[in-house]
Amino acid sequence: MDERLFLIKTLLRDGKREEAFKEAQKIRDSYWRSYALRWVAESYEREPEKALEIASKIEEQSIRDETLASLSYLFSKNGEFKKAIEAARLIKNQFTRKKAFRSVSNLLAIAVARGGTEIRLSDLKLDERDLKELKPLPHGIVYKDGKLMPGATLHRIKGGRFRPE
Image (cartoon, rainbow, N blue to C red; front, side):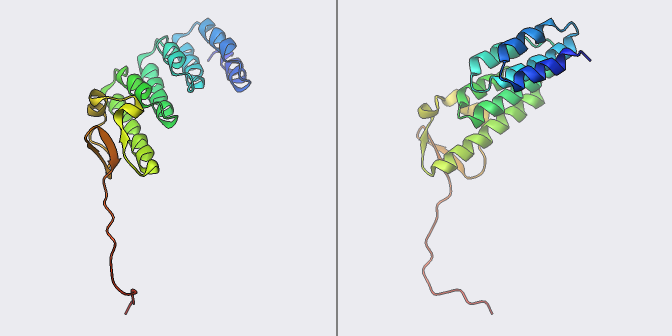
């Protein structure tokens, strides 16, 4: 293990991301450099372009795929669904890519449910191709006429009070 990893964690904790990035690039061992770059990329979760740029520099494929899956989740959590899908599409490992798309669709479903009403794909900066990657949609969410919406219909029940016997 490289002692720079501790320095990088400290720099990231202190908000010194550019310094952490420079230190990460100095690590000679590609495995540990990849881990350090993962941490730096994830620290840019609110700046998707920069996060993806740093993730692309990760040499170890398995660490790059896990980083992209993590970024996909973080971008979704921040409402950046288009960037989340973009990150997931870059994942080479089929299982990890499918897992990333599932987390995006689950967080998208939560966003739709919280809104309680329909959301146009265009409002999310998504298109039909993006939606194909996210299918099957989570239970309770439907897609119709270019909109995602809660799929359950609530019916009022008339009658008296419930009396257990």
